[in-house]
Image (cartoon, rainbow, N blue to C red; front, side, top):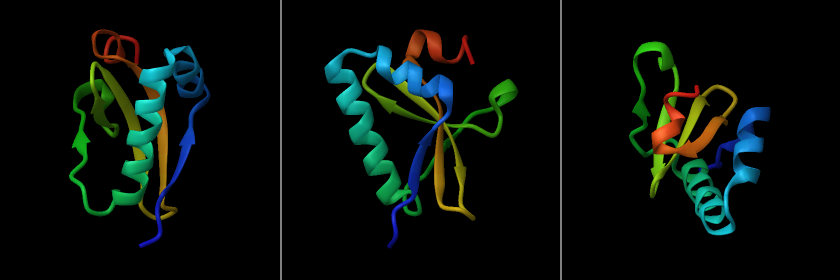
Length: 89
């Protein structure tokens, strides 16, 4: 199975650079895992004003992303602490 590519929205790339080394490493690892297993895992869809986005958890951090199955891309929209991620996006 061909893995999905992972792309970052400009804001999400900034979010990732602001994280400390260890959380950033864990987020990158989770994104790698998500890219390889995108077809087999169950994605957590968001509702309300964040409808159309999915989320995944990495400790106290959340990754918000969209999934484009036609072009096999995961587009990361935000990476932030759980207390801030839904409020700021």
